[in-house]
Image 1 (cartoon, protein in one colour):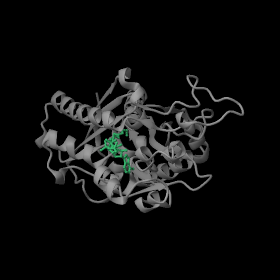
Image 2 (tube, helix red, strand yellow; image 1 turned 90 degrees about the vertical axis):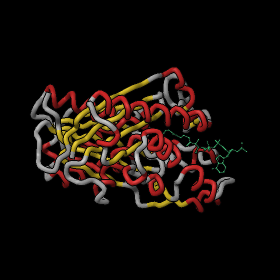
Image 3 (cartoon, helix red, strand yellow; image 1 turned 120 degrees about the vertical axis):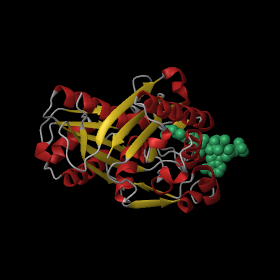
Image 4 (spheres, protein in one colour; image 1 turned 30 degrees about the vertical axis):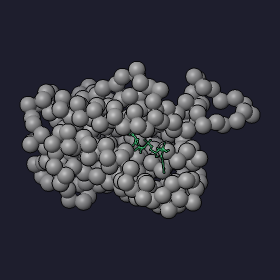
Length: 327
Ligand code: UT7
């Protein structure tokens, strides 16, 4: 099978920067606790009225500019999100409308692994339709689903979007998607949830909105799963491609907590300088975390031509995944 390429990358975060000091005024926490337990110093939250589709459109425009393409070139729109504008219409339909295109569009729900899931669906589309130009986005307004009274979760999450343009045709400088590996296991689904509003926890007209409408997480347990499963999936994708950790020029893991990232890197024996971290600036942006980190790493000059980049993600469900890119 011909390997498709990522023609363009782009990301966007809202303008409003939320510092740890802002949370000190809101809940019983401290900058010292947040930095030592998570590595997070700032995150960006939308302004009132700013939506998931708006962040996605900005990231998409940046990725299109990077690819040197107009929106009219796009044949499919895929958006990974848990915090879309509405249940209906899908956020991807709203993004297509804003970009002025009428093409197949759908949302994908795989929590923080959503971008790699969407990229795999995109790989399927370009395999079926060799002329397809697939806009793949991870976009989240996590702040709309944060319980600002819960100090154990509210400090963690940020808003933002990352986008990539996937095509079968190769192009100089566009990384090849060498392989993608997806996993899911629902047996520990209850450890990380946003239940309110779904048919399992339907909204009641005139009823109250309780904590079940927001992220609820057993952080300590999720932490252990995240370290083990991201480490495992990295080892699995390397092994099935006949590669070793020494072949990886940059590891870009899901940005949830710097202690998780460091633990995964330590277990894989990836040295610090070959592991990318931007959770300190953006917090955990769920499905947007991996595409933001990828575009951010390239913008910072951390990726050189010829580099092998290993992406890894872990999120609610649980879902976890890895991808190998060849720059
Ligand atoms: O993206 C999807 C995947 N998500 C993740 O991967 C997140 C995984 N989990 C984590 O990153 C960490 O578990 C947390 C950052 C959520 C929590 O860190 P922890 O080191 O696991 O802390 P903990 O939950 O064991 O709590 C330790 C203490 C508790 O106090 P006691 O019971 O020891 O008195 C908490 O109440 O820290 C307390 N605590 C806080 N203190 C100050 C929890 N949150 C805060 C806070 N400020 N914001």
